[in-house]
Length: 385
Image (tube, rainbow, N blue to C red; front, side, top):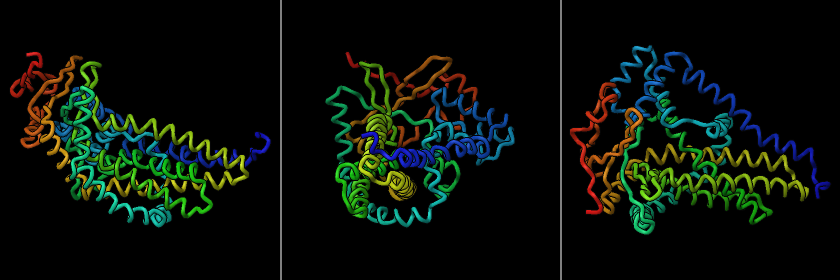
């Protein structure tokens, strides 16, 4: 009954849930104006980088030109690289909703530590099953066979833009890793809301333990699969005229499920607390605590696992993809409004020889893409012959 609901406490609970959003707006504005910069020099540099991206080329192929451009405009290399990262891997409002975790990091770290420790053997076991036992590549092969799709390789525009070496603490590297954090963070809140809704346990500790174990499982599967799929495999559906990176295809399936599920579960649990005489304010505070604990775990996974196992997982998966499917590697470029999908070589040749349409290209090459590609283009085989 509506009359049984404590409206005042419900409004306070909703206000608490809105706090991260209210903090995210100025944080995003600060990032864009102070850290990235909004001066004419930064705008000119970003337009130069955007020109490369619009042409479908890789940013690192123009590194010397971009370094010269940043010096000419008087932009520090770190800020120039960060602006490139913002165009390649933009941070949205969703990312800044998670940033208040920094202010309560000591508390969150203590609470999240058991989940992180328990997660290490689980991640290792899942890696053995998904990667070493070739489960993931076999699933993708079945996807290609059963649904009549084709798997090809198209290098990402941000290839080699970040590294796992000592520069991992550079602002641009931090932004790249943080760009991938929301994918795994909201799984944590999703896990807790499911356990809270379905089991309705009296013991908060048991509830947190079960949701933590469920989160570790989801985090491991999604995180390892997403790391492996950074190998730039693309799903092609000629019948519908679609080209979809498999990593984006995974996100397109997860985002509606987790996103809609979060709103449904959050609204349902909040109204249940209000109707049953529960403490809605405490529930909202618990939601924020779970969100920031999941953020700490997600950040730890993204940095720790990427540094520890990320490169080896991608390399192993690339070898499996070459062995299982031997996909062709293409360049997807745009020149004067004309989009060209050109086969260049096999994926193995691209990776082993680092085949690219030249390195340290100039903007003259960018304006003459057919000429820049002419020496290495191969014609695809006609499937009807």
